Length: 129
View (cartoon, rainbow, N blue to C red):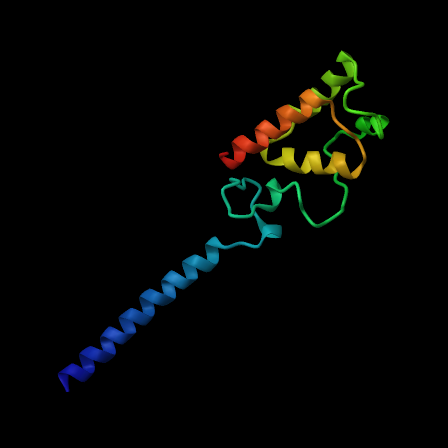
């Protein structure tokens, strides 16, 4: 009889531990659309860092003035125009840089080569590459 009671208590304790572990795991696994604003970029797939997101929604980052450069080739910017891109880039939060690049791509705005390289370095650093 004692072994039966101990077996039941042990089974309940194991079930409780497994239940808590499963609850903690489900809290850690958030869908990409619900990632917090301070997404660390260390997720296996972090929607905010992906340059290959499936949505084609254009999002602006207080950079509407860059639409003046739609279709312009990346190698044909003067210093003043490069600084305009740089100013936008360095006002972004690190977690926004990949989305900004995607937005520019969707808008057919080709950033100057140097700005694109700087932005990609920020994204790579954020991903820990």
